Length: 123
Image (cartoon, rainbow, N blue to C red; front, side, top):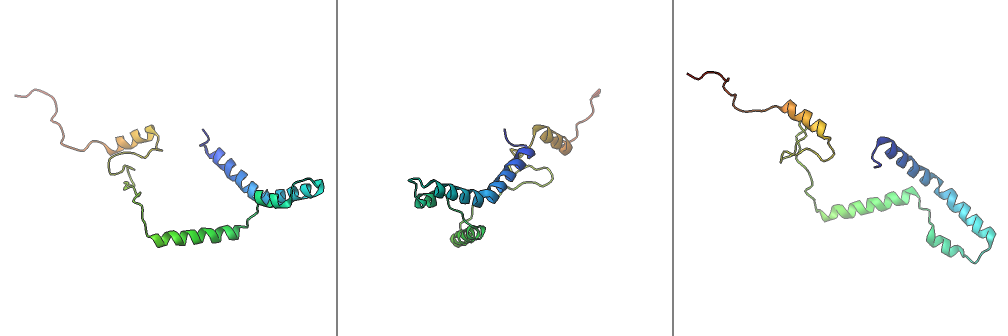
């Protein structure tokens, strides 16, 4: 159900807010645990919550991409689709396209073929 532009924007903004607030939340959690002097050790907290900087994540991603490029395995998922009519090689429209839009494009294409003779008396 959550496919509208508004919900996508809300999800994106919530994710950015989580990224921004993650270091503050971790610091607050550590402060609370330090003040409580409970039987919870900081070693346990380190296992549960770790803050990773964006640079480390990007470095890891580039290493994985370079490793993947070394395999030279290429998937053939490219769909050959006509840019104007949006039909693929089998004459199918994309899954995401609304039926009303498909019908409109189909009427624009029109029927190509031999013109029929007009009806009338055939002498």
